[in-house]
Length: 345
Image 1 (spheres, one colour):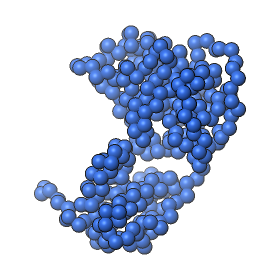
Image 2 (cartoon, rainbow, N blue to C red; image 1 turned 180 degrees about the vertical axis):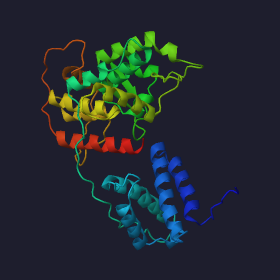
Image 3 (cartoon, rainbow, N blue to C red; image 1 turned 30 degrees about the vertical axis):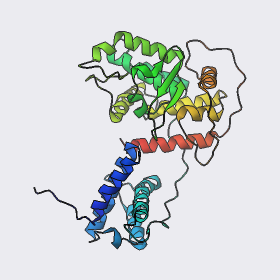
Image 4 (cartoon, helix red, strand yellow; image 1 turned 180 degrees about the horizontal axis):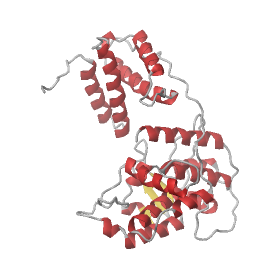
């Protein structure tokens, strides 16, 4: 088939320039990918209606597309959630804002588009300590892959890292002496150092001593957790791996990696951890509409983690810790993350 070349003034041609501009200005790869997907979908919709140039787009046309998203039905017959509709419209607003700033169009037709209001939801499933133990115990640690998977779940539970962050961990990111974990290029391309519990470190050690060398093939790039093929996990493969154990545990709840992130946050809060410490561990710049975020040192963070996280080799004596606050906003932020993660799987 002949290659289709976009006209230099078409929506598609400007899309290529916009994506290049986004990459040059160091937007996260996930953001650039999302913009590409959503804008291609919008451009297809426009081309079906004979609209090919940014100059042809008006506010009423964008409002028509917004109504199209509202009435759209997925293959299972379900409508798009308000959050999904919003996530598809946000790149369009960014695209036309850029077009106007670069003087490719005289005015921004998307400037007054009101995005759908997003409902405030709590996570669908939150595991308690017994349920976390049941999921972890579903892994057969007498088998190499089972031991690896137990170590993965221990790290997810101890630190609350995102699946992408766990998949990207390197051997040198685990400071066993200090009990700290370096998360590099997390969401928003931000690095952070967070505590990791002794129990998780013990499982990592066991995995490193007995399993990792068996999985390694070819050159070693230093990835901590290796797949069957000796490579780093993809996010979807990691979710599939953990989902199996949730099903095996037969606890009446569904989910995968994010369940451990929820469990860590809620259980530490229940044990008295201040919301600021949880927020620092999760890597949130803010929680919902609150702006409670404060930077805390790794020493303070390690102390509060040791005092409040239930997964320990030994439980230390109780310490004086700050009063809990803002639990609802935290859970809603986690629920939003979980929904975004499932959409990107």
